[in-house]
Image (tube, rainbow, N blue to C red; front, side, top):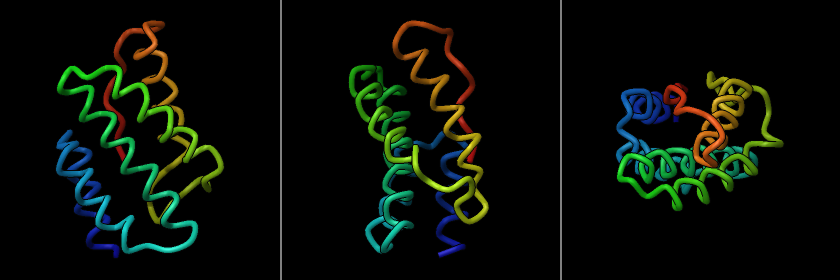
Amino acid sequence: MQQELAHARALFNRQGFFAAHEAFEDLWRAAAGDDKDVLKAITQVAVALHHHSTGNLTGARGVLARAARGLASAPRRFHDLDLVRLRADLARWQAYLAGDAPQPPFPQL
């Protein structure tokens, strides 16, 4: 799983959100337990940012809200991913998508 996770992460960090979503989705579908929940939420983050990139702000808001709920009770780290930082990044993106803040930088995993 580590190699596949590193590949999905690299796609995400290069802002290849559609491809990252596909890679994370493969990991999510193969996972079990708590790993499955975290991977589902990270997949949703990639989907939300893909929606943003295509101008679908309504879709981005809705999927990002689900992702944030899914990550709310996740551990501080997932493998080598800093979920505390990701949750903070998502809060800034939610404020932006609500019209309450300027667009922040894209999150990095």
